[in-house]
Length: 109
Image 1 (cartoon, rainbow, N blue to C red):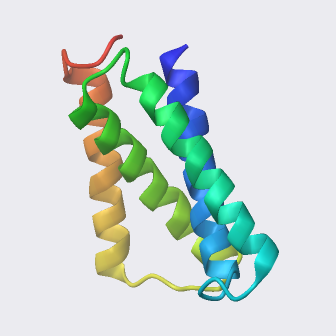
Image 2: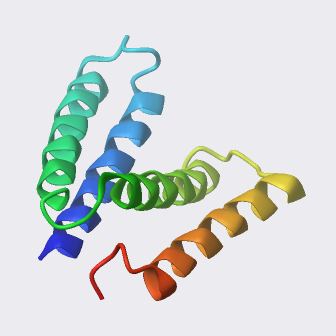
C-alpha cells in the first residue's frame, strides 16, 4: 500500500509542477488553484508513505521520480529540450532509484 501512496504522491507533485508552469507565475486562476491542491495532496500522500519507509529514502524516490517525470512532460508538453549532460544526469537519478529499490535494506521489498 505504501508504494501506492508514493506513486500518487509523485503523480500529484508532477501535476502540481506542470500546473505551476501553466499558471504563468500565478497569474492564471485555475492552474494556480491546481498547483495548491495537487501539492497539498502530494504532501499528504507523502506523509502516509513515511509511516512505512524512512524519510530520506521516501524523499529521494519522490523527488527523483518527480524530476524525471517533469523533464519528460517539459519535453512533450512544453517543448523544452534537454542537452546531453541533462539526459546523463537524469539517467543517474534513475540509476540511483533502481539501486535503492534493489539493494537497500531501508526499503521494504
